[in-house]
Image 1 (tube, rainbow, N blue to C red):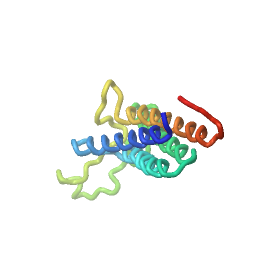
Image 2 (cartoon, rainbow, N blue to C red):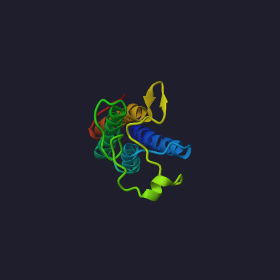
Image 3 (cartoon, helix red, strand yellow):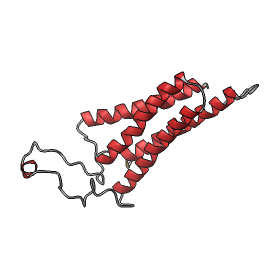
Length: 163
């Protein structure tokens, strides 16, 4: 395996997860606030991947690993909110107020749809989208860490590291 391959797979994995999130949104599963939080680190990982392919060294792959770990941690936090393991932000859980919505919004069918963070809108094998994001993101983090190790191996004189 090469550093470039691992970076491409890891950043490409984030691109695939982000594309999947947008596909689910297009299919009628609007994201909640915490779902949107989980998208930003994937976008950052994609940008980091583009830069890391062009710039050698381990710093950018380490940032990619941090981005993947961040969205994975957010996925675990979101899963805990969905399963009532802990409280979520009041802005998007069942206990939130309707602050910000007008009376007209509440009385019309076409008003904004409020998506609650503590409600599972889709699951597969009893795992929600947030749970699957966490699993996939931590897997991508491992790919980034391998890229960091390969970066260190390529800068060490006389090193013949292989995985």
